[in-house]
Picture 1: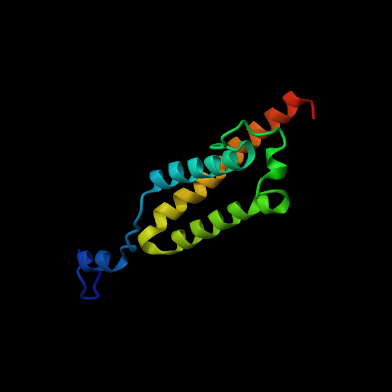
Picture 2 (picture 1 turned 90 degrees about the vertical axis):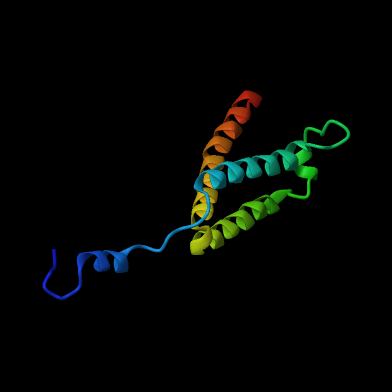
Length: 119
């Protein structure tokens, strides 16, 4: 059907289609959350150390104190940059979702560990 302006509806729809988004949402979620868990397990437990890590591994790691938030800030910056670019928008969105999963599950694990230790 024609709306009276001389442009067929098929051409109108073609002009209004959103820009296609690139990337993979699922892989961004999985790789993002897994990468954050590996990073923080390495930093706190000392994965890959030749000896068993001491109980205060967090205090002796390079991520001690406020520097513990640097990996999150870098990850968040990377995820936002990827989410802004149309070619990698879905991967960036997946990384942001992975950060949310990491925060929810990591917070739950942390609280559970604190409760068990009596803190």
